[in-house]
Image 1 (cartoon, helix red, strand yellow):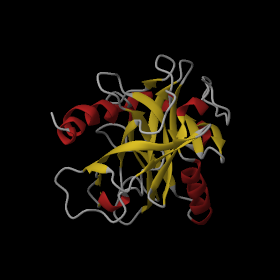
Image 2 (spheres, rainbow, N blue to C red):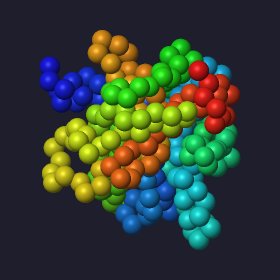
Image 3 (tube, helix red, strand yellow):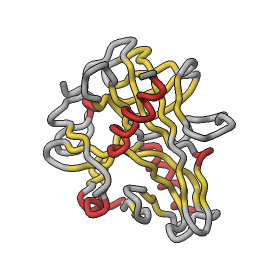
Image 4 (cartoon, rainbow, N blue to C red):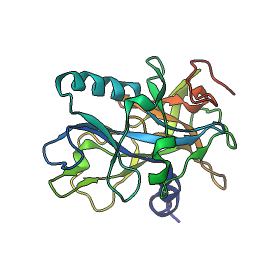
Length: 243
């Protein structure tokens, strides 16, 4: 099995239940002309609670836009049903340095039947070394299609390698990244916009995929991630790794 086939038909479906797109819009009833921005989220079971994780800069943008448009909401696409509102009241913790924010996913559980929460307490985040293989899904804004009748997010699967890892961050060089985007042409100029908050997984031959961290930024041909060990069992965030 070649790598492209493995990612598309084996690895991709394994990570899909743990992630999805979210977006900022002035209405969830129609996606035509109402969407201001979009990002991604990850679903995690810490052992004590189930949480939704995304980037703090996504929440910051939501707060800034809402000061001008009070009707703005944050929508999450969980299963095949309609998007649901992610309410600010469900906030557990946020950390600007880590660029992560956590929400209580309890109120969303009834809509998560087609999703899964990664059991972080059973498979703790791995320590990473240069060259380790990573995989993630992204939902780029350039593949988002909104109309009066519906909303569609195009998904891209990225195969990456760790270029460097520090205490709570690691980076991947994407200058030669492999990306899988079925039946889409031409290639996107910016395939990473909208990936903020997406969970990234360590991929090793003949081993379970393990949640390594969350995508926070892109620049200078580098994707930057915050290590998942910063997520505490109670859903709060720590700038000190918890190994």
